[in-house]
Image (cartoon, rainbow, N blue to C red; front, side):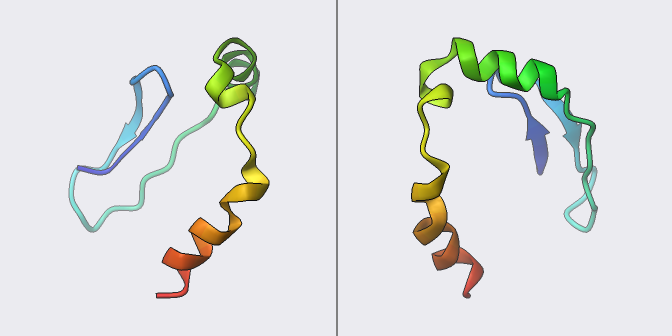
Length: 59
């Protein structure tokens, strides 16, 4: 099952099959509030993800 979800475990959208495009509206204000409250989201370093993403995107 493919899903888009919030950090708290709530589903925003779910794919009904493997061959489905999944999209969802993201509440940016809620996202920002969650980042401020939850330190592991607030303190993450997105710039450090580049190498990890490249590994999977290059395949």
